[in-house]
Length: 360
Length: 279
Image (cartoon, rainbow over all chains, first blue to last red):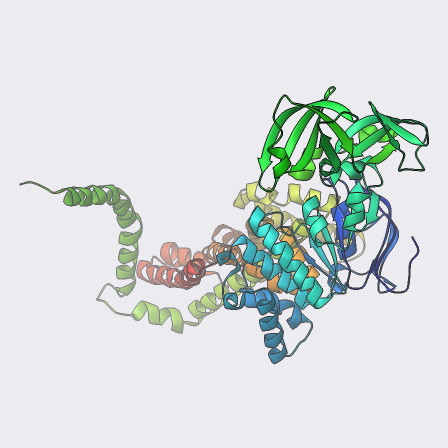
């Protein structure tokens, strides 16, 4: 990856390996000003290690971290132009909400009226104007995390770091906070690095996503690309839901069971391969010509339905509009065809991520 | 006569409180009242008055003893506090084998009986003790007076109080989450700000517990000052014993006891006020 002068944050060949063997190896990453980049991956993939290294809470073994072109490696956290929103809110219990927000400005020697103005504005931004004189413990989890966000935003960092900030909140609140954060990010044009293990969260708020696995970057692309064109079977299975089938490639075509389709992956070696198809990319038909399966279950989930189809030893998941679901019933023989699919070399079959985790 | 339920409950409540109240009454309240009464009786037994207290504050030796006691107590308390706080902070935030070893060793003095520790200090720091002999070996033949002096007394107080205070403060600092420290550093706090704006406020209550216990322990100490203190001035504990046994002036001794009790009450007041505070 080439480093451009415009990079707000540049990570170069970052390595940090712990005694346990966990950690990251040779990570390079460039983030532009005003960009929201998410580090996504299962626990232990090294995403938090990268974030804490940027914030100065971990000392990398190798590599460099540059913010606006200057290495920050020798700076302690208090001197770095970064601010962090922690998973556990980390509000200071012996200070009021106002004091929590004002602290950073005070030590930056802001004048009192300026502090007042800034804090008031920040509280307005996170819709907590009425909470200024409250103690953090009097606030709900969501409110506390809003205060933590405001506290970090106030410092006007060159890069804002967010370490799974919403993971302690319930699902509904998490969704609201996500939208709010995205709004704030658009408004302030702040560069943000967001760590999460929640793929939905990553897909919804990011300009770009860095999918990490085993201490390395698996893929770095826009959410759409990550979803549509995963570069590895790990990414395919970690992001969204996907059906995985065995196939054989002859270079031009891929054969899956009775299906023979053009090969979409020119780099694929000839021989066994993995075919990954998203549930919405499978088309169910009563006419023969596809993979012949049998419907096991029809589950209507509001505006769409999830159909489980037995195909050989596998159970494939298919999403269909609810109108079509009404015509389907368990036991029915059905033919499956693919609108779109991704193929990967068979060698990475063991790297397919445990799917449940991605949906936790 | 029929008793209704609430009266019965009330009687039961009283019955449960009475044993502890009686213990408190006979072990604490009666002796205090008795001591106050004794302290108000003139030494010749002629009548009640403040003569004994006036004597405490006018007789030069007595006055010196009081000031000396306060001096030793305040200096010992502050020094113990500063050293234990530093030690506790170092143990909490430091890493490596030094921390590990200090952690294992620092509380050992708590398991050494006071008399033995005091004699240990005498043999170590006395005029012809180990330290002076070792210094002589490398050619230093002047040795400051430590034992039987103010310095020795403060040193003994440090020996007795640092381990306990460190233990108290360590447990308070253990309750300060790393995350608070990290977020404070993230916000830009330097080492000094970290301590005075975060570590200290978050362990403030325990600090008062430590101060109170050190203060009370030192002001009422007897063994160490009796064994290694100077002949004059003396701390109140030793002076009281002499007035009581050697001069048999029990009423004056009582007045001294009441004075010491009042000094401790001042500490107790601050302690209770701190503990009562919210957060």
